[in-house]
Image (cartoon, rainbow, N blue to C red; front, side, top):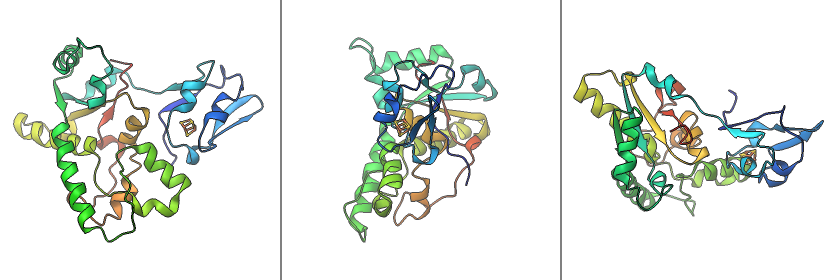
Length: 239
Ligand code: SF4
């Protein structure tokens, strides 16, 4: 089994072993040994609680630099609706979009239309779902991982429909590739979100297992993509 990726790192040099993270972790994925915190990767659900409680900031989110995106010919910011709520009342979605263009993105993709498409797919899925119930939304990667780690008997109840961010990335690559005559692999779909778990789910989607055994989905169940072919990630703290 390949190593699980997570959206943060523990700096053992600055860790003082004060155990705040260990006590906060809902899945007991952190152990403190010889005065240093260590991660049990397969138990971590990327909820981010340990980052918020560490008094020495020894646990920090990982990210990439903007310069690393220069290998792409066309860079599209895929903006989570939650991002717009991070600013003051005077900062409209339009001004946030303009700021992203000024930072160096070639286009900004706001994906509320894709969310409507998914709502319809979920409604259709619920209608023909053979059971068991209740069905659980797979929109939040933390919930998906929590079910996988702590309630494996309920995995079958996670809704097997693609996440909006995945559909948005596929659709924008198809569209800009056609319009601009650029190969899809030269187009970067950069998902911008304040959520740690969603950034890492781009590289390693928790819901991929669900889509493999889809009983109903948008299109055919697909094979796992390599990390390189997926949307790239960038933390909002970078922009
Ligand atoms: S991200 Fe959440 S699950 Fe993972 S180690 Fe931190 S507190 Fe535990």
